[in-house]
Amino acid sequence: MTLSEAGAATSQQIRLALGEHDLAAVFVIRGAVFVAEQSVPVEEEWDHRDTEADHLIALHDGVPVGTVRMVVEQEGVGVLGRLAVLPRARGTGTGKALVLAVEERARERGLLSVELHAQTHALGFYEALGYTAHGEEFLDAGIPHLHMERDLR
Image (cartoon, rainbow, N blue to C red; front, side, top):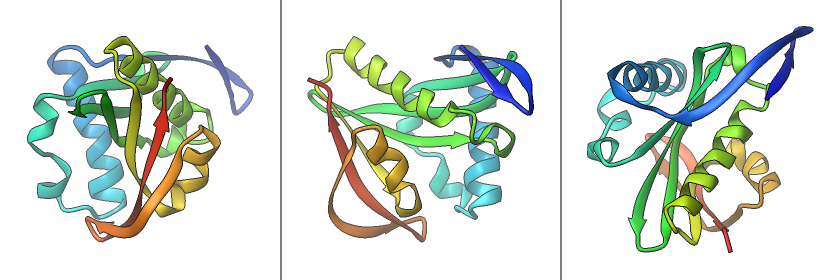
């Protein structure tokens, strides 16, 4: 895929994070976005689910710029989480590409739906991708969220 960024063509790749180098990049990106930018306490950002999650990484010209994880929460359901895109890559379609990659990974694993906890400021982003909000607003790491889901069938 080629993106137009400040008039220059940028090569974008989304793939599973493989090996220590990729996982280090995943955690650096999440630390920059959630811990440094959004003031999420570091002890809340990394959890035991990271060891069982499928981590995807977005690369622009080979440089890591975004990440997302998917955890299988219950039979048939994948949970999209920890979607983070560095500021320099925002507005390039990277976030959308990461969500679509999670959906593709969920289908590969035979899952029927994807759920997520969306920060309320991002509801429109997810709604445009076919996700529906439900339930009451709740706080996660002090940030307002809503449950959202998308049927993949």
